[in-house]
Length: 118
Image (cartoon, rainbow, N blue to C red; front, side, top):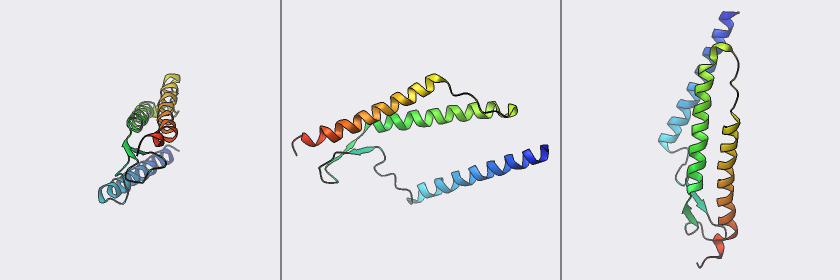
């Protein structure tokens, strides 16, 4: 039975490593477009005129990557027990607040961004 668990563990690691390599290669070759990843758009404007640097996207990306890395370290630390670690309530609140800031920025740019002089 222990051999089966070890085999499953190696299969999962190989799968995740393979996915990471595929995504990394596609990011480097440009097949995954990240050109305007941190830019938002204002409704009602032409495509190139309505773009703006979006700090709410930066903070959402930073908090999401940070939470994912934190949880990954918790999973690797509790791997011998065979159980997933509990997600702290504070992280749920932080991620909810981060998404609220992002959605607030999207709402502001959608409702009030197109009223500015063009």
